[in-house]
Image 1 (tube, rainbow, N blue to C red):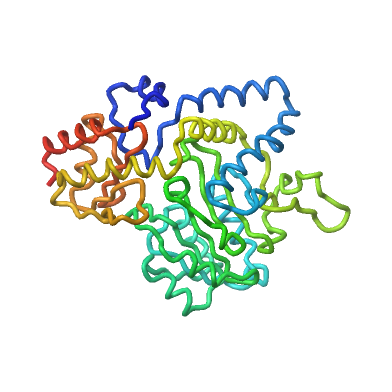
Image 2: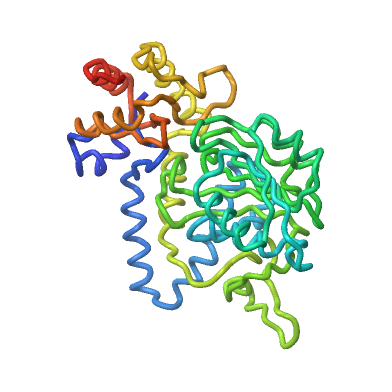
Length: 379
Protein backbone atom coordinates (compact mmCIF):
# COMPACT_ATOMS: atom_id res chain seq x y z
CA UNK A 1 0.00 0.00 0.00
CA UNK A 2 1.25 3.46 -0.86
CA UNK A 3 -0.64 6.71 -0.92
CA UNK A 4 2.00 8.98 -2.37
CA UNK A 5 -0.55 10.51 -4.71
CA UNK A 6 -2.24 12.17 -1.73
CA UNK A 7 0.98 14.11 -1.05
CA UNK A 8 2.00 15.05 -4.59
CA UNK A 9 2.72 18.69 -3.74
CA UNK A 10 5.08 17.77 -0.90
CA UNK A 11 7.02 15.42 -3.17
CA UNK A 12 7.10 17.93 -6.01
CA UNK A 13 8.42 20.66 -3.70
CA UNK A 14 11.60 18.67 -2.94
CA UNK A 15 11.81 15.72 -5.35
CA UNK A 16 15.24 14.56 -4.17
CA UNK A 17 14.28 14.46 -0.51
CA UNK A 18 13.61 11.17 1.32
CA UNK A 19 11.54 11.94 4.37
CA UNK A 20 11.62 9.40 7.22
CA UNK A 21 10.54 11.80 9.95
CA UNK A 22 6.78 11.52 9.60
CA UNK A 23 6.57 11.37 13.40
CA UNK A 24 8.15 14.82 13.57
CA UNK A 25 6.71 16.88 10.73
CA UNK A 26 4.24 14.73 8.85
CA UNK A 27 3.82 15.70 5.20
CA UNK A 28 0.68 17.69 4.56
CA UNK A 29 -1.71 16.09 2.05
CA UNK A 30 -2.70 18.05 -1.02
CA UNK A 31 -6.21 18.61 0.35
CA UNK A 32 -4.76 20.66 3.21
CA UNK A 33 -3.59 23.32 0.75
CA UNK A 34 -7.08 23.64 -0.66
CA UNK A 35 -8.37 23.94 2.89
CA UNK A 36 -5.86 26.67 3.69
CA UNK A 37 -7.07 28.63 0.68
CA UNK A 38 -10.67 28.07 1.76
CA UNK A 39 -9.87 29.68 5.12
CA UNK A 40 -8.50 32.71 3.28
CA UNK A 41 -11.49 32.88 0.96
CA UNK A 42 -13.95 32.68 3.85
CA UNK A 43 -12.13 35.52 5.63
CA UNK A 44 -12.27 37.63 2.48
CA UNK A 45 -15.90 36.88 1.80
CA UNK A 46 -17.33 37.01 5.33
CA UNK A 47 -14.84 39.21 7.21
CA UNK A 48 -15.97 39.39 10.87
CA UNK A 49 -18.84 37.02 10.17
CA UNK A 50 -16.39 34.20 9.43
CA UNK A 51 -16.47 33.40 13.16
CA UNK A 52 -20.06 32.22 12.81
CA UNK A 53 -18.74 29.43 10.62
CA UNK A 54 -15.53 28.82 12.57
CA UNK A 55 -17.19 28.57 15.97
CA UNK A 56 -20.23 26.86 14.48
CA UNK A 57 -20.13 24.06 11.88
CA UNK A 58 -16.34 24.02 11.42
CA UNK A 59 -15.70 23.72 15.15
CA UNK A 60 -18.42 21.11 15.64
CA UNK A 61 -17.14 19.00 12.74
CA UNK A 62 -13.62 18.93 14.17
CA UNK A 63 -15.00 18.00 17.58
CA UNK A 64 -16.93 15.09 16.06
CA UNK A 65 -13.85 13.76 14.28
CA UNK A 66 -11.82 13.76 17.49
CA UNK A 67 -14.63 12.31 19.60
CA UNK A 68 -15.02 9.47 17.11
CA UNK A 69 -11.28 8.79 17.05
CA UNK A 70 -11.03 8.71 20.86
CA UNK A 71 -14.47 7.19 21.54
CA UNK A 72 -15.44 10.17 23.66
CA UNK A 73 -19.10 10.18 24.70
CA UNK A 74 -19.57 13.92 24.16
CA UNK A 75 -17.77 15.99 21.50
CA UNK A 76 -18.55 19.15 23.47
CA UNK A 77 -15.81 18.30 25.99
CA UNK A 78 -13.23 19.26 23.33
CA UNK A 79 -11.63 22.68 23.00
CA UNK A 80 -9.03 23.93 20.51
CA UNK A 81 -5.94 26.08 20.86
CA UNK A 82 -2.80 26.93 18.93
CA UNK A 83 -0.65 24.59 21.05
CA UNK A 84 -0.95 22.19 23.97
CA UNK A 85 1.27 24.35 26.16
CA UNK A 86 -1.59 26.83 26.25
CA UNK A 87 -3.79 24.21 27.87
CA UNK A 88 -1.05 23.02 30.24
CA UNK A 89 -0.75 26.53 31.69
CA UNK A 90 -4.52 26.84 32.14
CA UNK A 91 -4.85 23.42 33.76
CA UNK A 92 -1.97 24.03 36.18
CA UNK A 93 -3.27 27.46 37.18
CA UNK A 94 -6.69 25.98 37.94
CA UNK A 95 -5.52 23.16 40.19
CA UNK A 96 -7.37 23.27 43.53
CA UNK A 97 -4.01 23.38 45.31
CA UNK A 98 -2.97 26.47 43.36
CA UNK A 99 -6.33 28.12 44.01
CA UNK A 100 -5.68 27.55 47.72
CA UNK A 101 -2.26 29.16 47.44
CA UNK A 102 -0.39 25.90 47.94
CA UNK A 103 2.59 24.47 46.09
CA UNK A 104 1.33 21.95 43.53
CA UNK A 105 2.61 18.40 43.97
CA UNK A 106 3.24 17.01 40.49
CA UNK A 107 4.13 13.52 39.29
CA UNK A 108 5.31 13.04 35.71
CA UNK A 109 7.14 10.45 33.69
CA UNK A 110 10.90 10.86 33.39
CA UNK A 111 10.64 11.25 29.61
CA UNK A 112 8.25 14.14 29.05
CA UNK A 113 8.63 16.45 26.08
CA UNK A 114 10.66 19.66 26.33
CA UNK A 115 7.67 21.98 26.54
CA UNK A 116 6.30 20.34 29.69
CA UNK A 117 9.74 19.68 31.14
CA UNK A 118 10.90 23.26 30.71
CA UNK A 119 7.69 24.79 32.06
CA UNK A 120 7.66 22.48 35.06
CA UNK A 121 11.29 23.24 35.84
CA UNK A 122 10.43 26.92 35.87
CA UNK A 123 7.42 26.39 38.16
CA UNK A 124 9.62 24.39 40.51
CA UNK A 125 12.27 27.11 40.35
CA UNK A 126 9.61 29.71 41.19
CA UNK A 127 8.38 27.69 44.17
CA UNK A 128 4.98 26.99 42.59
CA UNK A 129 5.42 23.23 42.14
CA UNK A 130 7.24 20.22 43.53
CA UNK A 131 8.01 17.56 40.94
CA UNK A 132 8.53 13.82 41.23
CA UNK A 133 9.32 11.70 38.19
CA UNK A 134 9.15 7.99 37.51
CA UNK A 135 9.66 5.69 34.53
CA UNK A 136 6.47 4.99 32.55
CA UNK A 137 6.62 1.37 33.70
CA UNK A 138 6.29 2.33 37.37
CA UNK A 139 4.46 5.63 37.34
CA UNK A 140 1.11 4.06 38.23
CA UNK A 141 2.68 2.39 41.29
CA UNK A 142 4.24 5.68 42.39
CA UNK A 143 0.96 7.53 41.83
CA UNK A 144 -1.01 5.04 43.89
CA UNK A 145 1.42 5.30 46.79
CA UNK A 146 1.83 9.08 46.79
CA UNK A 147 -0.21 12.23 47.23
CA UNK A 148 -0.30 14.46 44.17
CA UNK A 149 -2.31 17.32 42.78
CA UNK A 150 -1.38 16.67 39.15
CA UNK A 151 -0.28 13.50 37.37
CA UNK A 152 1.02 14.20 33.87
CA UNK A 153 2.21 11.50 31.50
CA UNK A 154 2.68 11.04 27.78
CA UNK A 155 0.76 8.23 26.17
CA UNK A 156 3.78 7.58 23.94
CA UNK A 157 7.21 8.74 25.11
CA UNK A 158 8.66 11.09 22.51
CA UNK A 159 12.26 9.99 23.06
CA UNK A 160 11.86 6.22 23.27
CA UNK A 161 8.52 5.35 21.68
CA UNK A 162 7.45 3.47 24.80
CA UNK A 163 3.66 3.23 25.16
CA UNK A 164 2.00 3.85 28.51
CA UNK A 165 -0.01 0.82 29.56
CA UNK A 166 -1.57 2.03 32.81
CA UNK A 167 -3.84 4.89 31.80
CA UNK A 168 -6.87 3.23 33.42
CA UNK A 169 -4.99 2.80 36.73
CA UNK A 170 -4.06 6.47 36.71
CA UNK A 171 -7.60 7.49 35.76
CA UNK A 172 -8.96 5.59 38.76
CA UNK A 173 -7.08 8.00 41.02
CA UNK A 174 -8.54 11.15 39.48
CA UNK A 175 -10.95 13.33 41.46
CA UNK A 176 -12.31 16.80 40.87
CA UNK A 177 -10.56 18.05 44.02
CA UNK A 178 -7.30 16.34 43.04
CA UNK A 179 -5.37 14.66 41.75
CA UNK A 180 -6.01 15.60 38.15
CA UNK A 181 -4.68 13.22 35.51
CA UNK A 182 -3.47 14.69 32.23
CA UNK A 183 -2.52 12.37 29.37
CA UNK A 184 -0.40 13.96 26.65
CA UNK A 185 -1.54 12.14 23.53
CA UNK A 186 0.58 14.04 21.04
CA UNK A 187 2.28 10.86 19.82
CA UNK A 188 -0.80 8.75 20.51
CA UNK A 189 -3.61 10.56 18.72
CA UNK A 190 -4.26 8.84 15.39
CA UNK A 191 -1.19 6.66 15.94
CA UNK A 192 -2.81 4.27 18.42
CA UNK A 193 -6.33 2.92 18.55
CA UNK A 194 -7.79 4.87 21.47
CA UNK A 195 -10.97 4.12 23.37
CA UNK A 196 -11.34 6.59 26.21
CA UNK A 197 -15.05 5.97 26.70
CA UNK A 198 -14.62 4.33 30.10
CA UNK A 199 -12.33 7.04 31.51
CA UNK A 200 -13.46 10.16 29.66
CA UNK A 201 -15.10 11.47 32.84
CA UNK A 202 -11.79 11.21 34.72
CA UNK A 203 -8.87 12.40 32.58
CA UNK A 204 -7.74 15.38 30.58
CA UNK A 205 -6.38 14.40 27.16
CA UNK A 206 -4.16 16.61 25.01
CA UNK A 207 -3.43 16.13 21.33
CA UNK A 208 -2.84 17.93 18.08
CA UNK A 209 -2.93 17.83 14.31
CA UNK A 210 0.77 18.42 13.68
CA UNK A 211 1.78 14.78 13.51
CA UNK A 212 -0.40 11.79 12.63
CA UNK A 213 -3.52 13.82 11.93
CA UNK A 214 -1.49 15.37 9.08
CA UNK A 215 -3.05 18.82 9.53
CA UNK A 216 -0.06 20.90 10.52
CA UNK A 217 0.39 23.48 13.24
CA UNK A 218 -2.20 25.47 15.11
CA UNK A 219 -4.85 22.80 15.66
CA UNK A 220 -4.28 21.36 19.11
CA UNK A 221 -7.06 20.19 21.37
CA UNK A 222 -8.01 19.40 24.94
CA UNK A 223 -10.61 16.96 26.19
CA UNK A 224 -11.67 18.30 29.59
CA UNK A 225 -13.86 16.12 31.83
CA UNK A 226 -16.96 17.78 33.25
CA UNK A 227 -16.64 18.88 36.87
CA UNK A 228 -12.89 19.46 36.70
CA UNK A 229 -11.97 23.17 36.71
CA UNK A 230 -15.45 24.51 35.91
CA UNK A 231 -14.04 28.07 35.93
CA UNK A 232 -10.39 28.10 34.75
CA UNK A 233 -8.44 30.96 36.29
CA UNK A 234 -6.56 31.83 33.10
CA UNK A 235 -9.27 32.70 30.63
CA UNK A 236 -9.89 34.71 27.48
CA UNK A 237 -13.00 36.13 25.93
CA UNK A 238 -13.56 33.10 23.71
CA UNK A 239 -14.34 31.12 26.88
CA UNK A 240 -17.56 33.11 26.89
CA UNK A 241 -18.12 32.92 23.13
CA UNK A 242 -21.20 30.71 23.43
CA UNK A 243 -23.96 33.31 23.75
CA UNK A 244 -21.26 35.70 25.05
CA UNK A 245 -21.97 34.34 28.50
CA UNK A 246 -20.69 37.35 30.44
CA UNK A 247 -23.00 38.56 33.18
CA UNK A 248 -23.04 41.54 35.47
CA UNK A 249 -21.77 39.46 38.39
CA UNK A 250 -19.35 36.56 38.29
CA UNK A 251 -17.67 35.82 34.99
CA UNK A 252 -19.69 33.44 32.86
CA UNK A 253 -18.12 30.46 31.10
CA UNK A 254 -19.15 28.53 28.04
CA UNK A 255 -20.19 24.94 28.73
CA UNK A 256 -18.05 21.89 28.02
CA UNK A 257 -14.44 22.10 26.98
CA UNK A 258 -14.94 25.63 25.68
CA UNK A 259 -14.47 26.88 29.24
CA UNK A 260 -10.72 26.42 28.63
CA UNK A 261 -10.58 28.69 25.60
CA UNK A 262 -8.36 31.74 25.36
CA UNK A 263 -8.72 34.51 22.83
CA UNK A 264 -8.59 35.13 19.09
CA UNK A 265 -6.72 32.45 17.15
CA UNK A 266 -5.90 31.44 13.58
CA UNK A 267 -8.70 29.06 12.52
CA UNK A 268 -6.99 27.76 9.36
CA UNK A 269 -5.82 24.64 11.19
CA UNK A 270 -9.42 23.59 11.70
CA UNK A 271 -10.02 23.87 7.96
CA UNK A 272 -6.98 21.69 7.26
CA UNK A 273 -7.88 19.17 9.95
CA UNK A 274 -11.43 18.67 8.67
CA UNK A 275 -10.23 18.38 5.07
CA UNK A 276 -7.69 15.71 5.98
CA UNK A 277 -10.29 13.80 7.98
CA UNK A 278 -12.62 13.82 4.98
CA UNK A 279 -9.78 12.59 2.76
CA UNK A 280 -8.93 9.73 5.11
CA UNK A 281 -12.57 8.67 5.23
CA UNK A 282 -12.87 8.76 1.44
CA UNK A 283 -9.70 6.66 1.10
CA UNK A 284 -10.75 4.17 3.78
CA UNK A 285 -7.65 5.05 5.79
CA UNK A 286 -8.46 4.36 9.41
CA UNK A 287 -5.92 4.53 12.22
CA UNK A 288 -5.95 0.73 12.25
CA UNK A 289 -5.15 0.52 8.54
CA UNK A 290 -2.40 3.14 8.67
CA UNK A 291 -0.85 1.55 11.76
CA UNK A 292 -0.79 -1.84 10.05
CA UNK A 293 0.93 -0.35 7.02
CA UNK A 294 3.53 1.43 9.13
CA UNK A 295 4.11 -1.72 11.21
CA UNK A 296 4.88 -3.69 8.06
CA UNK A 297 7.48 -1.11 7.03
CA UNK A 298 8.95 -1.09 10.52
CA UNK A 299 9.22 -4.89 10.44
CA UNK A 300 10.96 -4.74 7.06
CA UNK A 301 13.50 -2.26 8.42
CA UNK A 302 14.14 -4.14 11.66
CA UNK A 303 14.62 -7.43 9.84
CA UNK A 304 17.43 -5.92 7.78
CA UNK A 305 19.41 -5.42 11.00
CA UNK A 306 21.30 -2.54 9.43
CA UNK A 307 22.03 -0.79 12.75
CA UNK A 308 23.63 -3.55 14.87
CA UNK A 309 25.61 -1.06 16.95
CA UNK A 310 22.40 0.67 18.09
CA UNK A 311 19.80 -0.57 20.57
CA UNK A 312 16.19 -0.50 19.46
CA UNK A 313 14.28 0.95 22.41
CA UNK A 314 10.81 0.02 21.18
CA UNK A 315 10.88 -3.34 19.37
CA UNK A 316 7.75 -4.73 17.78
CA UNK A 317 6.00 -7.04 20.24
CA UNK A 318 2.54 -7.39 18.76
CA UNK A 319 1.08 -4.73 21.05
CA UNK A 320 0.45 -1.03 20.63
CA UNK A 321 3.45 0.62 19.03
CA UNK A 322 4.64 4.14 18.27
CA UNK A 323 4.73 5.31 14.67
CA UNK A 324 8.50 5.59 14.89
CA UNK A 325 11.47 3.39 15.73
CA UNK A 326 13.86 4.73 18.36
CA UNK A 327 17.49 3.59 18.10
CA UNK A 328 19.89 4.53 20.88
CA UNK A 329 23.62 4.72 20.23
CA UNK A 330 26.60 7.01 20.62
CA UNK A 331 26.68 7.61 16.87
CA UNK A 332 23.06 8.78 16.56
CA UNK A 333 23.94 12.40 15.82
CA UNK A 334 26.65 11.58 13.32
CA UNK A 335 24.43 9.10 11.52
CA UNK A 336 21.59 11.59 11.36
CA UNK A 337 23.94 14.14 9.79
CA UNK A 338 25.35 11.62 7.31
CA UNK A 339 21.84 10.72 6.18
CA UNK A 340 20.86 14.39 5.94
CA UNK A 341 23.85 14.99 3.67
CA UNK A 342 22.22 12.51 1.31
CA UNK A 343 18.85 14.30 1.66
CA UNK A 344 17.53 11.45 3.78
CA UNK A 345 15.72 13.03 6.70
CA UNK A 346 15.34 11.35 10.09
CA UNK A 347 15.61 13.10 13.43
CA UNK A 348 17.71 12.77 16.56
CA UNK A 349 17.00 13.39 20.24
CA UNK A 350 20.24 13.25 22.17
CA UNK A 351 21.67 9.80 21.51
CA UNK A 352 18.43 8.47 19.99
CA UNK A 353 17.86 8.32 16.24
CA UNK A 354 14.16 8.27 15.37
CA UNK A 355 12.89 6.84 12.10
CA UNK A 356 9.24 7.38 11.20
CA UNK A 357 7.27 5.86 8.33
CA UNK A 358 3.89 6.91 6.99
CA UNK A 359 1.32 6.22 4.29
CA UNK A 360 3.53 8.08 1.82
CA UNK A 361 6.16 5.32 2.16
CA UNK A 362 6.27 1.87 0.62
CA UNK A 363 8.57 -1.14 0.73
CA UNK A 364 10.81 0.36 -1.96
CA UNK A 365 11.40 3.45 0.19
CA UNK A 366 12.44 1.28 3.13
CA UNK A 367 14.77 -0.72 0.89
CA UNK A 368 16.38 2.53 -0.28
CA UNK A 369 16.92 3.63 3.32
CA UNK A 370 18.45 0.26 4.20
CA UNK A 371 20.78 0.49 1.20
CA UNK A 372 21.89 4.00 2.15
CA UNK A 373 22.63 2.95 5.71
CA UNK A 374 24.65 0.04 4.37
CA UNK A 375 26.88 2.52 2.59
CA UNK A 376 27.42 4.70 5.66
CA UNK A 377 29.76 3.87 8.49
CA UNK A 378 27.22 4.14 11.30
CA UNK A 379 29.72 3.50 14.07
